[in-house]
Length: 98
Image 1 (tube, rainbow, N blue to C red):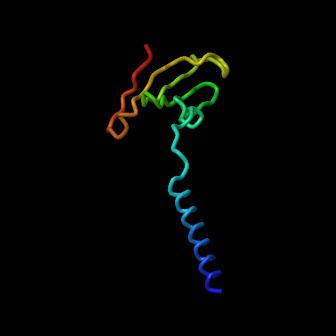
Image 2: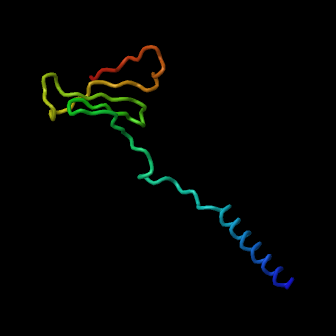
Image 3: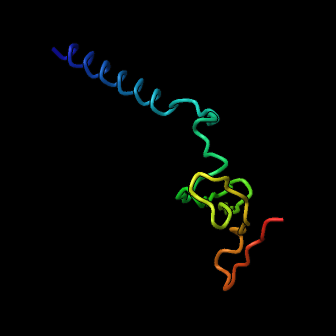
């Protein structure tokens, strides 16, 4: 009977050791794929006449709007941008479109 118990204990210890090795190695860390990476732009708000977009790469917020007196669906034109580096300052001055 003691031989059977010893064999069972060795078997359980072997399984535990094998599991410890497998979980310690873990899956190889691969570079994130393009689908996993965040997008370059994020739409913050839109209502058909205005569009506010964050440029994640340049750290800016971009503003687009239709011409005054236009109707929803007209072309949106670039109006200006704000640098997100200025967030936290008492005054943020937007840069107007050229």
